[in-house]
Length: 273
Image 1 (cartoon, rainbow, N blue to C red):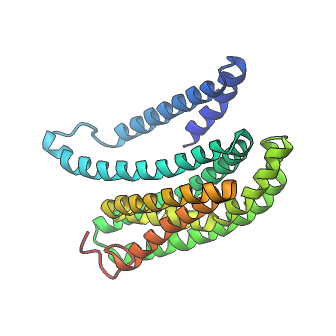
Image 2: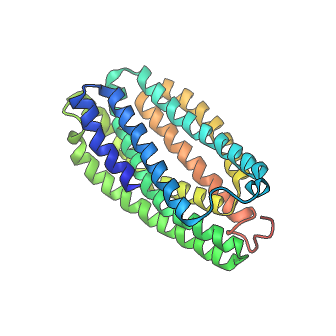
Image 3: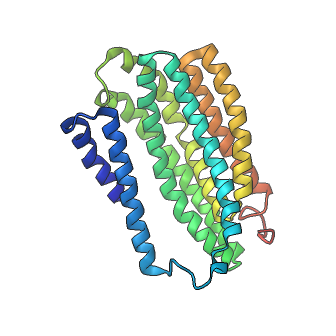
């Protein structure tokens, strides 16, 4: 991910300030960085495996389409909740919207750290399941969850202190800063919940439990949309963050419930997979 991030950091000021493209320039820089990392990953993949199989039967289109549809459904549910929250903040006015975006971007940025922990765990789990080594799968899942909780607590402390004193790095507007201060407790306090939710996702993906991941996320999204609509109308900016906190809590609970009761690394056997 470093080439993507580096490219984005370099191109953002070029397109925004030199070419004076503003928000469009930021979008262009992001698109270019995404194409760059895709090309690099594809090139690395070609160096290790045969991208084109000897027979079309080996492509397993049915399996990819099924799992791809489930993951697409899940991504739509996740994206819709966050997008709706931003829309609700925009209805509150430009100042709350600016404060919300600062808090949201920090909130989302820290999720990349949780993803960085979940992805290797996902790969190890998939390898363990392929070898039918269910003891290793269970041990890996437990260790990754422990590390996720520790990471969440560290992030909570770091953001609680750092964002309180460093909010002026994002804006000098006093009214925006005052609203950001209202969102900081939610951004920091939800970090352990967020990291566990992302790690549980990685565990489910590693166990190829795509159907549960998709449909549970849709159910969580439906409840979260209702909460966002009600709480944003009654409590404004704070209500949106309460709803987002409950949204991530529901995601973590769904993962925890599956980990303990469903087929996968949290049970004594993965034979159902």
